[in-house]
Image (cartoon, rainbow, N blue to C red):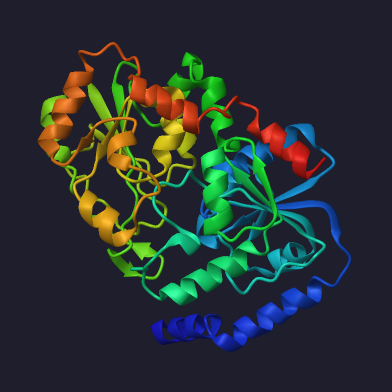
Amino acid sequence: MNKLKALIIRVRRSKLLLFVYKLAFLMISLFPKAKKTVIFESFHGKQYSDNPRAIYEYMKEHYPSYQLYWSADKRYLSLFHSHGLPVLPRFSWQWLKIMPRAEYWVVNSRLPNWIPKSRKTKYLQTWHGTPLKKLGLDLEDVHMPGTNLVQYKRNFKHEAMKWDYLISPNRYSSDIFSRAFGFEGRMLETGYPRNDFIVNYQNDNKVIDQIKQKLAITPEKKVILYAPTWRDNQYFGRGRYKYQAELDLHMLQQELGEDYVIILRMHYLVADHIDLTGLENFVVDASRYEDIRELYLISDILITDYSSVFFDYANLKRPIIFFVYDLEEYRDTLRGFYFDFEKDAPGPLVKTNQQMLDEIKQLEHNDGQPSPTDLAFYQKFCYLEDGEASKKVIEEVFG
């Protein structure tokens, strides 16, 4: 039985099958365009989240004449079905019949490089973050498995040439995206649709309490969201990255357990299963929670490192602490930054668990007001976020 399963997997991953599938995709794209048909995909079909979700929700309410579908990884279909979403299992025959002919694609990360795009299709690339760490054509080296610098840049450029529209959250990002992606289409500098939710509901206690209830967090508990990024050089294999546990959750539980709950939100590329034995009443693993926007809303403090989540969270003007135990390696060897992170980060940078604990306790004595540095950060990166980015994007693309 195991041999048969291994054989099926090898056949599915064979170059011949990929060639046949690509040829079928090209042939089907020659059929008449499926007008007013939109395919949405978030993080390779693993989530109902992010900018595609915000655009979908707005279109579902205000553009009822459009046929909307979600491209979903087969392993995550139950998530999409739980929301009653119209689903096309990714790479299935149902998907293949519609994807090549759809009038619009709305996607927040790169599609597989083999997927061709017909001129009939308009491709809206929403991307998924304001860049701190270097990306795309700006990288000077790669440490990821299964690729090299030349191949990585060639694939990135090839993908970006398919994009007709690209969403940017601010002028800073527009300048970087144009260069780092080699993007030549139409830049939509509107703010991020995914931030409409937190901007519009940040003071809605009813919504906040409902989300806490879903996560079994009592209303009186303060919430710390820990959302680190992945490390290019720590991996099991291509697209499957390790989580190196540097944050001492047991120590934090001893000091903060009575008043706080910590929500863990690992990057979608991280493949580790985290052992939370003994931490059940203090730590909530929300790595597979459908959308981080709800976790932002209920969090009193964000702890992160180099993840772009802090750009979005800054819209709430709540405290951010940066746990950067490997700052020099990440900055000088793995990625590099687009601005002086140590000088301009909207919160303190700490390298040890004790420093982290001290900063959390110090916040208890502050009045919660952002510092002048934080306000300057907000004015540079969050100035477009007015709660109507979805509407602006849709009016530009769909008319």
